[in-house]
Each structure stands twice: as structure tokens, then as C-alpha cells.
Image (tube, rainbow, N blue to C red; front, side):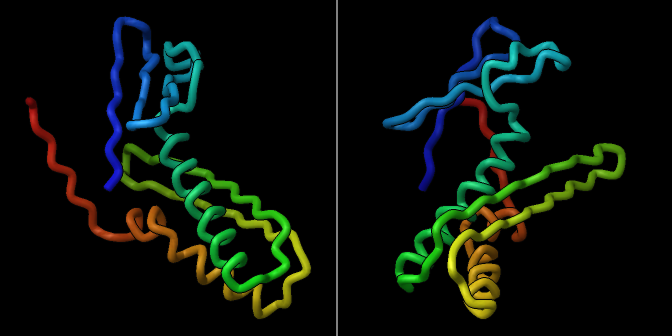
Amino acid sequence: MAHVKAIIGNDHYKTVITTATNSIIADEPKHADGTDLGFAPTELLASALASCTAITLRMYADRKEWALDQVEVEVIFQRDNEHNISNINRNIILHGDLSPEQRERLLQIANQCIIHKTLTSPIAIISELV
């Protein structure tokens, strides 16, 4: 279970996000009246998919003892508010001495990361004032 807390004060729109052991800053870019001190919320969403994909591939390749030297994952998130559609493009670059079969298997494994599964499955969000 992931548990995070986001706190915003009077700064437009600097938000401190914390877990039990870590913290990051989210913000809006200057063109959206933010101060650009951290990732925008859409960038945080895209970074969750990118990092989860990279970690999942690293774990799998390590377990198989494959010669995967580096994984690069680029995620482009676009939101069409008018049509209520989100598009996510994920580009994966694998560095290392990998066979075509290993590369194909790693592409399949990328789709097994928990964030990919979350984003491609029904999601229920329950909001409460406490």
C-alpha cells in the first residue's frame, strides 16, 4: 500500500509531498502561475510509469542474469480535456548485449509493471473530507 500526503500553503502552487521516509516538491510551471520548483502533477503521473517500467525491467533482467546495462524510459502524457481522453506514449530503450528474444520478452515484462497495470485497468477513487 502506498501512503502519501500532499500539503500546500499559500505559495502558488508549491506542494510538499511526503511519505514516511521521503519528500518531493510538486508545482506548476511558471506559465500556469506556479514557481516551477518541482514536477507538475502530470509529470508525476508520467514519472510513476517511467520509473516503474525501468525498475521492473531491471529486476527481471537481474533475476535472469541478462546483460542489460541500462534502461531508458521516456513517457509522454497528453490530456485532451475537450474529449476527456488521455494519451500516454512510452518509449523504451534497452542498452546491453540482448538477443531479439530477450528484448521482446522485456517489452512484455514492461507491461507488467504495477503502474502500467493500474493505468490500464478500472480505477476507483474514493474522496472524503475528514
